[in-house]
Length: 70
Image 1 (tube, rainbow, N blue to C red):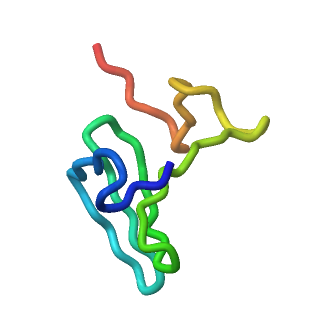
Image 2: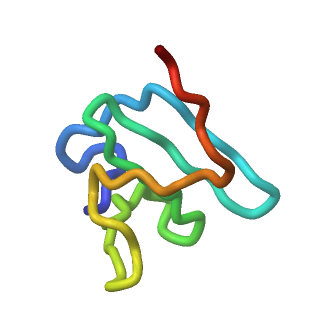
């Protein structure tokens, strides 16, 4: 999805993150966008999972044993 001024409705971002070479934004629905400096538009990133990644909701062990509470 490309979003630029004058083309439809631009998303409202609640957070923007910049690195040395990239610019990312998060909207209210949890979608992530990356700014394309060449076309000067925001492009929605699509999440994908590999077969090795845990299923959504699965919690990975962070190591070590957990204390038992009475």
